[in-house]
Amino acid sequence: MVNVRDLLADDVVLCDGAMGTMLEVGYGKFGLCKEQLNLSDAHLIQLVHRSYLEAGARLLHTNSFGANALKLELYGLEDKVRPINEAAARLACKTAGPLATVSGSVGPLGFRRFEENLSDDDILQVFTEQVEGLAEGGVAMVSLETFLDLREMVLAIKAVKRVLGAPPICMFRGFPDGKLGNERDTGSVLRTLRNHGVEVLGVNCNAPYHLKEALEDIAESGFFDLIAQPNAGPPEEVQGRVHYHATPEYVAEYAREYAALGARLIGGCCGTTPEHIRAMNEALKTVTPGPRPRRPARTARLLVEVQEQAAAAQPASRFLGALAQRFAVTVELRPPRGAEVGPYLEAASELGQAGADAINVTDNSLGNLTVCSLVLASQVQQQTGLPAIMHYTCRHRNLLAMQSDLLGAAALGIDTLLALTGDHPSGGDNPDAVAVHNLSSTGLIGLVTSRLNRGVDHHGNPLAQPTRFAVGCALNPNLNLKYQVDYLRQKIAAGARFCLTQPIYDEEVLEAMLGETKGFDIPILPGLMPLRSLRNARFLRDNVPGLRITDAIMQRLAEARTLEEERRVGLAMARSLYERIRRQSPGVYLIAPFGNHRVIGEILAG
Image 1: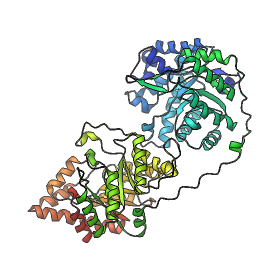
Image 2 (image 1 turned 135 degrees about the vertical axis):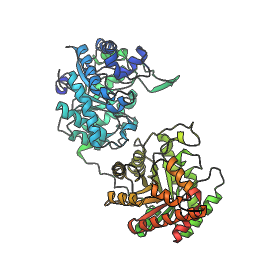
Image 3 (image 1 turned 90 degrees about the horizontal axis):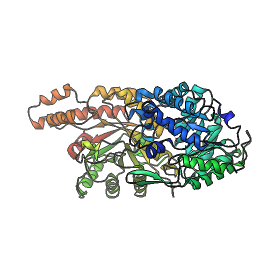
Image 4 (image 1 turned 45 degrees about the vertical axis):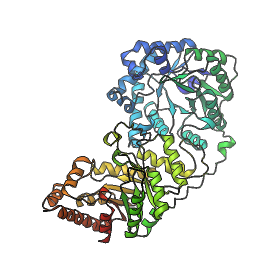
């Protein structure tokens, strides 16, 4: 086996095309784990490799794009990472023989998975396990394909270097206007990858024209040998399946243009077949490739450091302003289920007079239908003059809807958000609703603080002006506190500027939470929701996930002789916790039970 440097001694090396397309369209393998076929149908995988070899490909990629533990877990195959990758490498190497080189295909973890509480060490280990399996099967190089996130790519590079001792071939998914994955600053991306020793960089998984735009910026840097692997045109959904319609001749014309830019590795991605590779092979026979980079020379684009944008000014949240000056009180009211919001606004106004500094407006809490939090938060601010903390969940919105809503919230003057993943709708009053969860709460915080607040959308497209949100997060101290605190650290790293907790009923829980978060540089406001009766306490304990109501608390309520006495006991316990919170915390998050705002007034009145 040769390494990357040996491979690039040739003028242009033709890579293979899509493995998944051939398995689905060519052999009917829809709706299953393609990588598992390395174990269950080895002959079929070799047939696909051989078809590309016969079409002229001299670099084959293993059938292992999604063969990491997180993606294989979706099929119950997380314990098969090493054998699947080892088999993928062995099959490709056996088919290639002396005619071609093999590179291990490694894809990203997947956007949702990448957001799920994974540390850098976790991600590094996932990639390391996959690369070790590929190395055991015989590969001497690895191709990172279709990456969107620079942080994730850097961790994958580290894994490859740890196992193979050399950097991988790196490919971002290309986008229009030259963007590389989700990264908006191409110059910074190129400098980072160069610092990590990357020598071959390119783009894949987009239509030929848009891929060329992204490739041009990399070529201009003069740092890297180039790789280009376009799709067979833009995707089109037909009867629930994705199709690509660009002809082999069309893709082959762009192969010539990639070579003219200096690309030394050229192949295909989604939708490409042996026919596309064969046409590219013929087209490249008559091309004089562009110059290779003259390292360490730099072009003007990267020789002159582009002045970084000034760090976005901290958003001027009125609620955070109150927190900076005094013990601050924010109150959550239950939103109405109908369009009549007058009583809600009247209650909010009364709470402001009683001492509340802000109103928390929930977003279909527990998966139950209520008025839209965006509209209600805007009404609170307009009608009461109080700042609103708009709860915003990822549960039922895709990435486009979230960004659109948040731009609308900014236009309405909302400056403070609480980012939440959201309770699953199956437990609410509309259980047939579909959960989307395009992001987790941590991803939503990052979207706002590192994208929208800096004047670009998720994919780096410029906005007319940046948003100015202060974003908060949630913490549940009642369950697995150390895990919750570790998760809180990730949210803070993503840009959270304050934290509200789930309701606390036990003083021991409060003290443990304050101890574990001592020294955190954001204000953490304990949640407090008064108990109204023994029946209320039983319901919360048995039906609301994430609350801890101890037997001692239940006993105190049970000793009351009347419902009114139960109410007084619940109020007394809430007042006692409130006084402890006043002494030890920068503020408090009060939740009106059953929407009864007057109970909150009693606590504030002392």
